[in-house]
Length: 287
Image 1: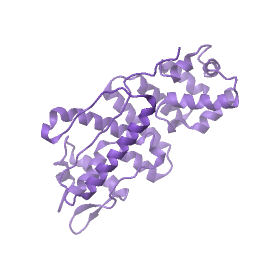
Image 2: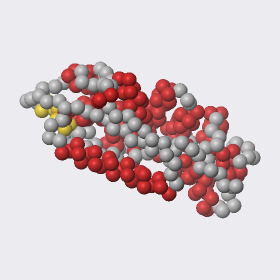
Image 3: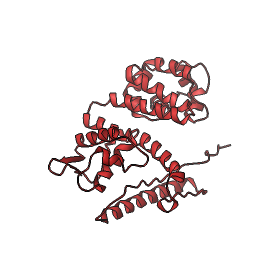
Image 4: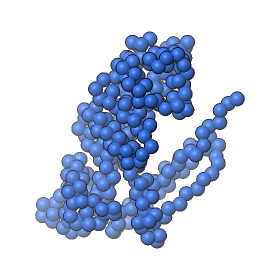
């Protein structure tokens, strides 16, 4: 069984997951399908964590995998090099409660993920999402008219970013063929109207970006005048089967926003719209 787990762990590729618990669940379900007698107690034993129901508790979010046990698990599964480092970082992220520290760990996770990607285009897309600034600069290029540079673009940004950071964003966007610089007017021009994410990074790519944008939304409560922002929320009870409908409404709203933005001929500001839907309660256990 240990050899089977090791082989499956290689085939699944932990670097495709953003939560080690989901990786464990996928691993368990594959083994369970081939060996119906397989249980979470056996799963825990095969991972070198003793005779207990620990993995069931971890997969269901009732317990966290400790750093010590994480070291045991990567050895049991034969995870090496970037897969080993990636898994251990996921565990570190799950165990950290410091916001700044979590951001640093997330950046490390993205770096490791980038190492495992062979395609340069996909690697650049992951880099696009690794910093909040790249998306903002991409849109700001369309707003700025006439001759502009990293310095003039940086002067428009809220929060502040240095001209050197903006130049790195411009270089990345240009290498991705999202923008180009006109040699005559010295103006950056958008080549692509939108950035379309590669499905290979859908699980991880937006995580760091959303993490930062949510922080910026919190900052805007005291940074931006009330007439320039709209921060609102609601807490409501819904049935489990209604979640899909709510998510569909969010997607529909986003599509309407994009369609409206495309209608405007003249644009002079860059805005961020965050829409979040997340649970505040855990599913009740069956008696």
